[in-house]
Length: 559
Ligand code: NOJ
Image (cartoon, rainbow, N blue to C red; front, side, top):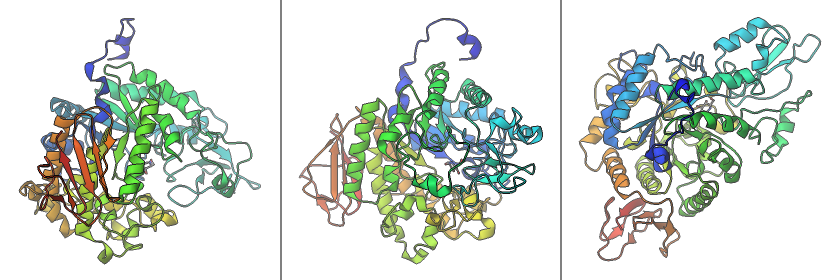
């Protein structure tokens, strides 16, 4: 629906599938690493169009595209130079329209990534801010401060950026700008109405082009309240992030922005959907992003941060289902994305205290040498965890390549790395190596240039072992991870039911079993001892050995 259509006062009659997102399987495409149609080594929009049948055959309900906008690629495209265009290296707006048409023709919805906390320093608004100078309305769209010292030669505060290094950058006239992330990613000032207008325009632009929803990057950071005298980094670190009044993160008033956006989402039929990326302190804080008046849904990264452990998984599921029931949202489940170590690899390592997923690809090498990764065990556990997740009520977010059981690439040469977290030294938690290991272009064929990714090379080199995980190779093996995902997604459509579950007693601390309202059961054996089922119980997914669920395996039973 266009703005013009809205000008009539006709009541909007909602489509029946307005709730499509509640239990959808959403597949994340990282466009530069998915498929390269024009042979320049960089994945592109036409590459995704060419794989539309693959996505339909996999059985996903929606595709979320990470940024494909013009970008200098200082942060893999999360530094956006123009929110309403396609990077010429990736294609054109006409290609994008073809992609939407190709996916919609196959019943697949399209979600695009919105990056509202910061733009690229190449964005016209930031270039205008630099040119206009101190005190101008143009500068007010970003977060500029005078430097300290006699001539402003010192930063306004000692803050560190998320990727390491300082968070304030001088512009040469005594002023500095704030960037949470890389230097090339200046933060917007969301107190400025022009910034609101820019994003309302962007949301309508893509909605008018037919996209079905939005993934909101760093949704918890937009609103800021910076006092005249800035606190030090140590003072910031000591502040409570659960009060809703932190100067930088998860402020209660950020929801005002999303209430405004909701008005735009609801202009369309069916309403456009949104999912918040909000790394906040508690499930209760996260739920604030997932209300029907706000973004509607928020990523729940709790399983992604957990060990492969029955008690942890059960507590997380119970907590999150309770939270989403309280807000009227539906939970999201995630095990992998473009920011964390692939779960097949995480599960092949001994559990580490703290937060292994957040430690980035680097810890595979620095924290645990390659020969300490139990690859086969990691793959087995990954499939068990994924099938557990796919049986849960709520929506499931899959990351490209996880259907292949793909592992993280640990040994990327420094000169082939791209992640700013690597170049800026990152934080010690990431062991300094960053996130390129989960962003290596996908293998489509067992041989050939870049394993079928394109006709030339791949922008991050692929290791030789990628051929074992190629789509064509797994296609031919009925027991492969790919074919198991396909069966699971097809069955999930058939079995999908009300958004609840009931835990069943298993008599074992390392075995979880739950039943959905229509009798669909999921049994996951997290342990090493086989778990016998009752005589006559025959799974529709996953095999038994001698009537028992084998070690580290999930099976599904029909009701
Ligand atoms: C979260 C994105 O997922 C990540 O890839 C990016 O680096 C930061 N936000 C900054 O945009």
